[in-house]
Image (cartoon, rainbow, N blue to C red):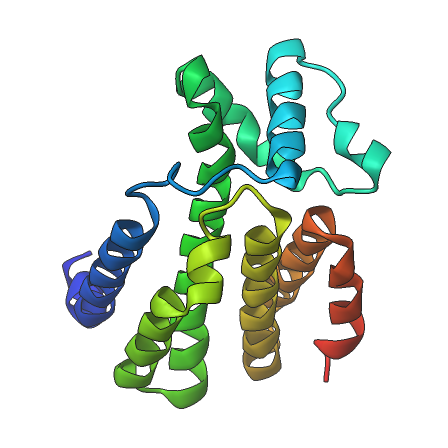
Length: 192
């Protein structure tokens, strides 16, 4: 265990620092942005599933995949009832954090340097588009996260040809399909 920690300590501390910066940019004032109409609908669906313990596929009545609604479920049970907006937005914050980890690993895998991985991760943290969507109860942050992880495991599969990496690639593509329908385009694009 000690040898593993010594081997990966730079990566561990880099990810810890990047995670801290990410959370400091996403969590404070999480409710300061007004609730959008789509967010209200998705939060209502999540609250409905959490209180009724049924209709797990309620979002499909509007043509939306259910993964974000399912991710809201535990937060509605953990947090107080009056924190429904925070409970609805926390899955996007977590998905954005997963995207940050995937970007770090993809950059390290492609360029073989920590410096490039850290720079690409910092860029992800400060780009306003991601700063906005990682704080909203919308499907886009979750789609971004699942597709980035699918890309990472596709690159690993191309390098190692291991079944584990191919299965994880397929799992994250499936999760992308459960997060937003536009992930269908990735089935064609990602192998290339």
